[in-house]
View 1 (cartoon, one colour):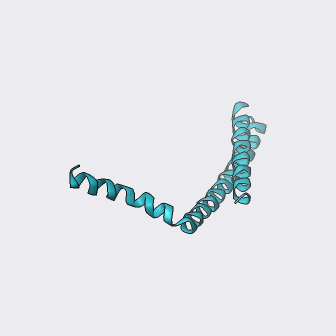
View 2 (cartoon, rainbow, N blue to C red):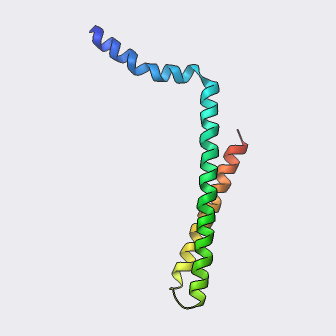
View 3 (spheres, rainbow, N blue to C red):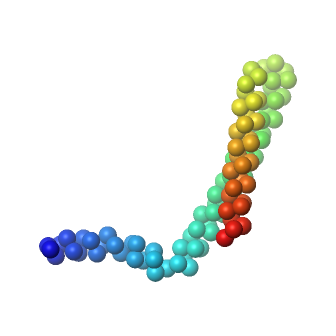
Length: 93
């Protein structure tokens, strides 16, 4: 085997080795990522709920088609589900 190939393989393996040797840091990184995901999901939910309310009011005024409030409600439901999954994932750690 060419020594350069061995050196290249060793260099490629270093990040995986470092990752495997540092489980506390990996766990901390996962926790931070999960918290960030929950914060993002809450922001998305807040935005979709605002959009739903806005489209419902516009529909009541006859300013938008019926499918727009329905789509906004579906997006809010999806955002709520995403947040619930994130919170469940966070609490299971």
